[in-house]
Amino acid sequence: MEQVMYQVSTLQALAMGYSRAVVSVEDFLRHGDIGLGTYENVDGEMIIVDGKCYRALEDGKAVCAEPDMGVPFAVTTFFKDNEKIPITDIENINELKQMLDLKIEEDFGLNSMHMVRIDGFFPRVCARSESGYESHHISLKDILKKTQKDFFFDDIKGTLVCVYFPDHMDGINAPGWHFHFLSEDKNKGGHVFDIELSQGTGIINKISRIQIDLPSTPAFDTYALKEASQDEIKEVEQGNGTK
Figure: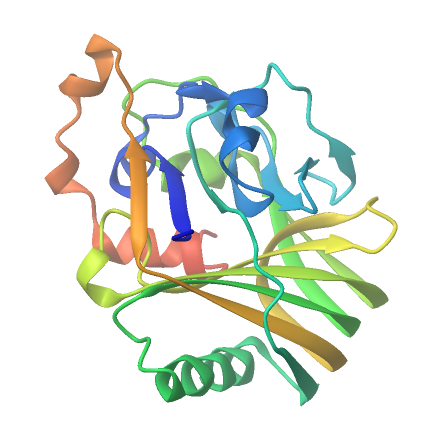
């Protein structure tokens, strides 16, 4: 069966401030068992591992997401247990991106989507999350300036959920790699902007099909999505850079 990346809304819409619920967590989980995203009003970071959905709070604590919570933007797929790749001595997030780029390039996958799971021991995880902020037509960057908190986890076991979108899908999602972390005990997590990985195991899923459910409310059509700043999207989705 063909593997499908399921996505709610677009990154352009979230970047421009459309953070209303499109589907519920319960409905979203019908489309996959691994993924990442955010919640209604950008109320925390989403991490899906082994079919369970978690919410990283603004202090880095992770809790199970309620089934009726709203999802404005997220991606998921049903993960396939492919060949395991040993990963060691990664000193920062750029090294990890370069390593993953080489792995997908070997499989002629730079123009495809990828979902990657890495389980391992992390000497340091630099991450962020945020509290909810109800708004209309306020950009994601401006919301995060008000609500985002940074935090660090040291000497921790856990899972890194990694999503890759190719450059030609810019706007639908962020081009390049996007990382969310969940600790092994499921009590800590967040959106990752830097990382050290001493030893771990990675599995890569190459995906060539996407299904996108757009918001159906009239409010969605009031957003000028092509005006979304690509520089701002890069800052908030692939780095710290919001302060």
